[in-house]
Length: 435
Image (cartoon, rainbow, N blue to C red; front, side, top):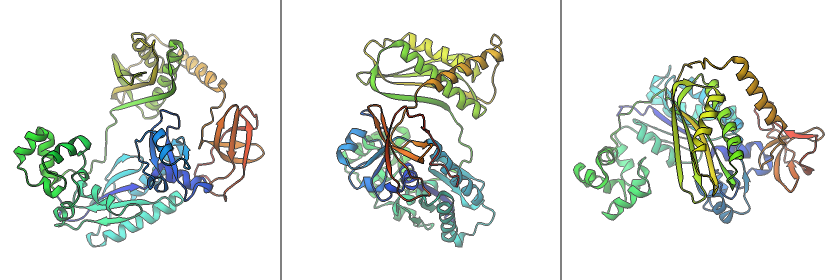
């Protein structure tokens, strides 16, 4: 561990839900739940107004609806989330060139690597960063922990959540950590916590009583030795500025089981094009194509095929994934399907038997097919109406779509309902950062 509190962990508060509340004035101060909105959906993020009703991330949407039926249930707008995340990460890189993003809303920062680091002015540095983030993102808040290690910085960021700061002074790490529940240590999930409770261990202080060998016998070699060290706040991991992308994937859970093989093949092709686009955008290619299938009874399988050379070609990825699907029995229906690519490289072996014109024609045909499909409206989606301007979908169904016309820059707006095929209504960008 370091002799100074110089590793910062920043976590944006209820990120997806906070972006939605920022961009939808009528939802500010009200419970908002973002995630899968269908009967098989899962909560991605819940606002703090929803959390008081017991709603949590990874909870089934159906249970969340039962706990908080008056909440706004919204599908995700990842373009808006990515845009906000980019502003935050850019500001963090101004504080230090050594930043380790963990997700869109979370990152470690090595403050000591910054140009003007002052161990005696950490609070002022953190306050300036948080104030700038709120200003840049239109009011999003962040919780921050600063400590001499990644472990303690991560734990510290939870102490004064939301919108708070906790700095662990060097030398006090074990004292701060001791009274906490053992589950405060990353990696101690429900199964491990249950094993510990059976032998009378509930707090981190309790976890310090067994010897290292006893923990190894109880939890296994890796977990036992790791927890022995972490319970004593021993952590010398460095902030890693480069986190290698190991795979690129897309998956979807269907509202109703799909057993029509032709329909599943169309979905696989669409997913392969999406994965191909993401690979090309990031200058990557991959050798191993994986198909993920969840059957009607929740049994989940993955099937993989490894190519001779890395590729980002949508046609090759689609053909490989379809071949994997062809070998599967889908008679009773699939509830989830996914396509992924791993074994990534930053180069591509060209398909010598396919011309660029072939690829271009296929991509244009696919884009034309997508454009011909009617717009699928979902709650929370940005829309634009030729007469009423920008807004978001309040609800949709039975051939109708209800829209509340407001943006982050307006007061709460009026609500109107239209036919789903109204030519004046279409997808919009009301949630962007453009003034």
